[in-house]
Length: 102
Image: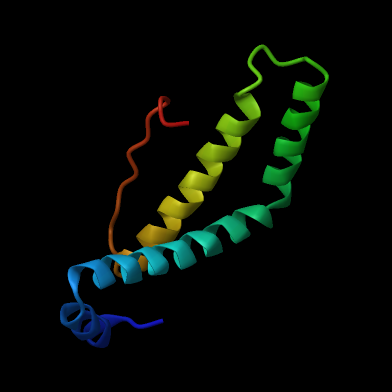
């Protein structure tokens, strides 16, 4: 993957549409990696399986809970991957979280 000055020079020489397509491809690759990492988390997968089982048994008061939990964790995996990509190593950072996001 291109990074740094060579990436910048490549993007500057491209048309606006091509820049958008390349950035979208890079983000898709990054997000695919984040999703595959989340897929490998056994504890998360166990929780998601449990929630799907509870949904199938009619034990949940809202059938959207499994997809909401899945979406929250997978979205955070993508956010963390993006932070790892753009932040300098050992740079100070803060997380702002809200109960409304997950």
